[in-house]
Length: 215
Image (cartoon, rainbow, N blue to C red; front, side, top):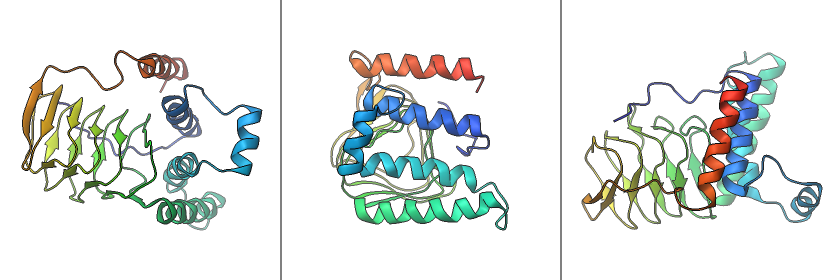
């Protein structure tokens, strides 16, 4: 099981650029929107995309002194992040998730600010991950609609949680499916959620970019 020791803190402009590209690639299959997509977004904004951008930028600018130019930008982006969160029904800490985060739909999602999760996580509607400092979750979490992760627990990599399940104890193994109330292991040695379809190619592109950027 991989323990997330780092705090998903974006400290450099290079890391910020990478996170923004990784999120967009995982959600759309491209590094950035085309001109036509930008026009469409101006007329009918994709608020989830804007929320993810505000999440990453507020995380980056939180490292600057309050009275600096970066501190002013932090105030702007954290305010925007919270405003979009209220609009979308999201309450998520801006340092909770690694890169490649996917939120497919609007709807209530609550993730405590002290939770630390890995990369390539998927959050569906009505997901709740309660706030306990030290709670860690590995890469490729797939949280189905209505799933809940309670208490100070640790989960490994590639954990899929079935709809309306409640996870209230740690599972040290990777590549499992959890289901039930309380949740138990329903399947072992399962593939990651992005294997076998177009998201797998997106994953490889992101990891290649990470190496090229030296992150």
